[in-house]
Image 1 (cartoon, one colour):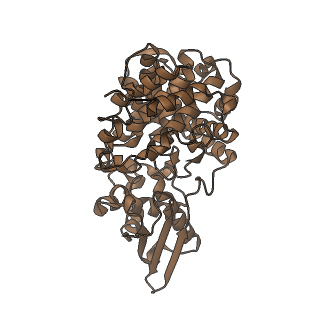
Image 2: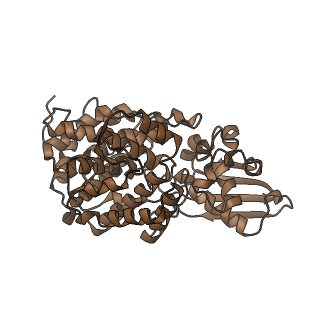
Image 3: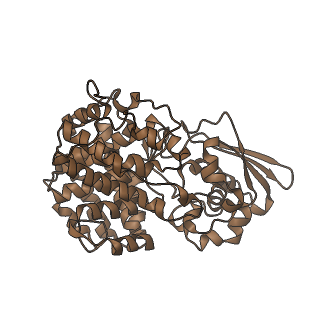
Length: 457
């Protein structure tokens, strides 16, 4: 059946095709620069990790594009997949409150890759990053939570569409080409959540694969390739396939587009683990700061939102003893316990050795949950502890929101401090890290992205 009038993808494409850096809000630009800095530091931090090294070794196409911290040059897709995987690999990258999804890990690597390959200006690249992240944030609101219910990972599924819109906007695609890029990307979308069973590495790969899918979709569409105009709302559409239990709220696709920027609500993570765990870690740190000893604790009950249970709480016996440092990132009891003992939950707290620490695991086994129907998740991430000590004393601790989110954003200075720590963790000298930081902060003024090549190796 012929669709009368512009489709949803065409309306979104029409808006993005007109965007320039001057037409977007100053806040959107500032968030994009923060995300760029955060992403680069994370890429360097993960460059020596086995999953990144194996991905690099398994990618057989060289080219003119940069993966941060790796000596060889990659083809466009290769740089996108390596940088995207490294960004998300330690679960320390951005998120979106209200409709949880990672954002920059899929978009920024795609846009940097096409920017370097096709000698685009820094201004065009930053505009593409803003467009792509806006697309991810808006599309994820359409059926928030329903993709997880269908066992799909929104990062890999929606990420391909956002990466395509970001790369296509940076490349200067017109309305038709951008809509076709989204149509192509819809058939490239993939990623299931079976990694939750044993902490498998495929979750790490999803944003990288989405980034390279977006690159390929944009470049194919640039040649005039014909793809579904009705990818979002047709009879066999994207949301029907990946979120079959949803009644899609399509208002989010175009309502206020260009005036209201969803990507301004991107949150940056202070801890290297599941986002919804963060307020609970804050509560545990405050408990430790009261001078409570772990041996004094009889039990800790955590009122929680139902949407957190299947990923972060259950099966509870498995969460009490995660098989690896990576699996520990998605264990609410482990993250809370390590936060109590170490007053942090950064990269050092999620090594395989740390995940076997008997002191941490003993405290984790004292932690349980209770579903609270009044919990605001996913509109807000909060933390709640009801602690019973062995002497009968009870302590209640609550954290009303996630630090780093809309209620308490991380400043640029905090993002830079995180970046510097991550660069050091990845083995770069401080001087080299500062050189990359300066480059990223001045990116909008760059004539092209040839300067990225010095950050290989």
